[in-house]
View 1 (tube, rainbow, N blue to C red):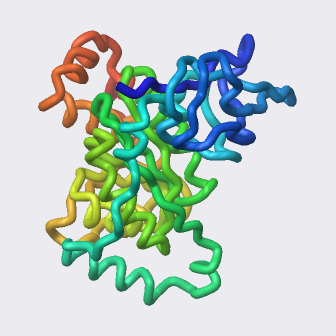
View 2: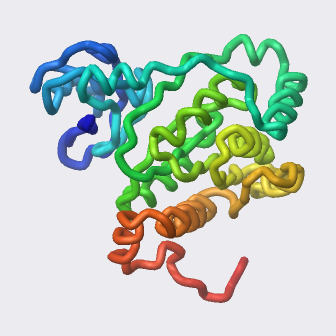
View 3: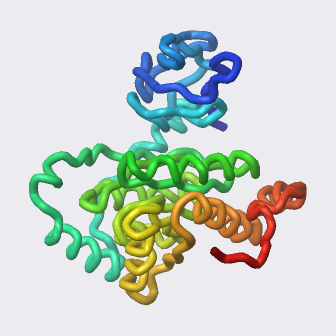
Length: 284
């Protein structure tokens, strides 16, 4: 079974860092305590050693990503596990809704925007436990994603983070195909424009998707109204914009996963605090 590589403690009071570069590539042999990647925090760069010996199975995070202490960045396992992750050849989507949504997206996306898209493959990983995929479309969506990640960590739920864009049909398709193999049970799409990205992901992944509108453009009203254009049969729900919506979304998916995952159910059984902070009856 592959071993998770997480960001170690970076010093007192330091909760985040930036992954600078990988010193080993997937498929390479690594030894315990051998430098694996470089991270920067509070203007200090450090090399982080491998926690165990084995074959580097995959990079979960990439250079330039901001990573939280304790978050998953890679996995180390066996050569067989690494070979299992070789991405399959891409096949056209069998989802009619996905085809129509992707086609509409490509025809409406400016060519200059498509030129800047990174369509590098998203590898599959060995399933460990049920997890939630947190997706953002741009840097403006990261504050909402951070709130969602904080709630997931508080509840002890597994998660992974992705940056997908509405004009990335190949990358969205790769993400969708590999999601179940990574034990992803639900997807949170933070921000984006009018739930369009959430709809495309849901049509491709066949997973429940929660759209969390960005709290701009009339306090997120554009995002909420955009959800009304999602075709019937595409499993997307929308919550409140911003931080409140992020907490609602995590509360929703955690209970959804707990319905069929005993481990998650046990985690929630020990959760005594109400994530909503109570309800006073005052909506505004």
